[in-house]
Amino acid sequence: VEQVVQHRALLYDKAGEEHYNVVSAFIKSLRGSDPDAAVYWMARMIEGGEDPRFVLRRMIIFASEDIGNADPRALQVAVAAQQAYEFVGMPEAVLNMSQAACYLACAPKSNTALTTYFRARRDVREHGPLPVPMKLRNAPTKLMKDLGYGRQYRYPHDFEGNYVPEDYLPEQLAGRRYYTPSQNGYERTIARRLERLRSAKKASRKDDDGPVE
Image 1 (tube, rainbow, N blue to C red):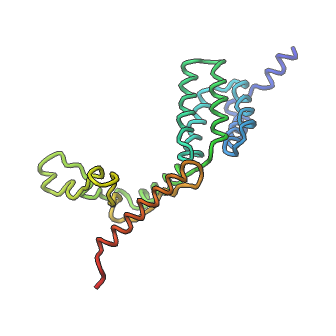
Image 2 (cartoon, one colour; image 1 turned 45 degrees about the horizontal axis):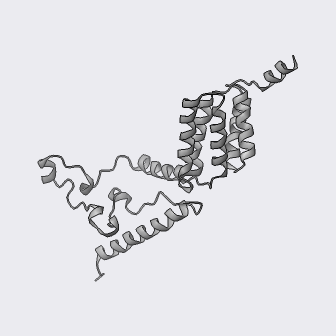
Image 3 (cartoon, rainbow, N blue to C red; image 1 turned 135 degrees about the vertical axis):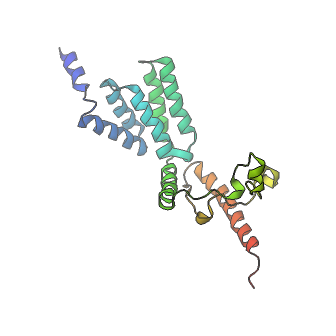
């Protein structure tokens, strides 16, 4: 009887307040880089009857929302855990889930996937469907080519370093910066490279403008 009572105490209404409290605690523990707490709250969900797919889905979202390019492997680990669950099944799949949760908790953090998208979305909603620059348009027909579609497009692989300074945004949004890499994990390396590319593009714009008379 004692064992039955203890087991029932772990069960929780998947649509109730405690369900959302435990899920919130799990995500916040991952975000706070606490693997012990993260696995504890995950165990609370699993032992309480939660569908493991729900937990895995949250970890896959977390890998991009809260880690992103600070550790690109995090998304691979989370997706691999989901695939392992489908292949192995419960109860052994809790090992894959525990491994993934610990990795996500200990990984360097960055929320730039979230902030970058929201910045771009703000311009989409504010400015509407701005026209695609002519040089970036697809030109599968002769008529389209005659109209200037794809004209003046420069293929990056034809240039040194496989890069050529170019504007790819609509003209009204030229110079916009949505992605600002953090200084955490691998994103620090991305930040250095992106700064070099953006500096080259800025210098190219000055050269195109020519001297002021």
